[in-house]
Length: 259
Image (cartoon, rainbow, N blue to C red; front, side, top):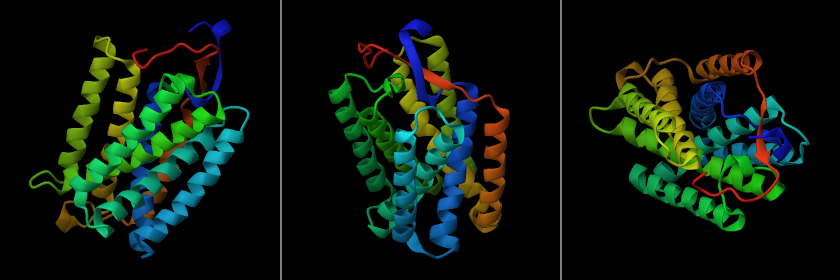
């Protein structure tokens, strides 16, 4: 994209580093959410209230910010993953609709927000994230996608004969397929982005559960707070060491879903 026809965005460029940090953030969200709702025994509803409140504050800060701030952006992503963890667990377990029911409801939420975004802007590309209204659509989509990913990860890990490592392998292969489609086909980049974004969440969920679940359940039995601290340090190191630069978005309208 020609710099003369674009301006700097407040979301990061979609580089390999972006996806590495995103997977780390989703794994951190799983262990962090479970730490509050399970280890601290505050429950899914209280955990959801805490993380949703934090998410709203960070989203407002992200929208108000005049430029791209790596730590603010990734803190908002982590807040969305932890909120997604507790919301998915609340829907799946406390509401009694189970993993299939929770996944279907959350998928409809993701599709509903994307439909509203597309109807309003004519595109759901991250390249269009340039106004407060579009940023609101962006973060709402991200939050629902993180919640959907949690439900999908738990559903897959709970399937007979799959487990946490099996679930991680399934979603890892699915991400590899999306990457192959990106490099070797002309399929909509917007569709592939949101597919990859959603798939990183169940990958992180299954890896996070593998870390902190008991040995008898197929996990490593690492303390949830310890696992959360390790992942937080790793993620901070990635943000500091991997070059962080903002993406760019077009000055003029005209992009479509297929671009």
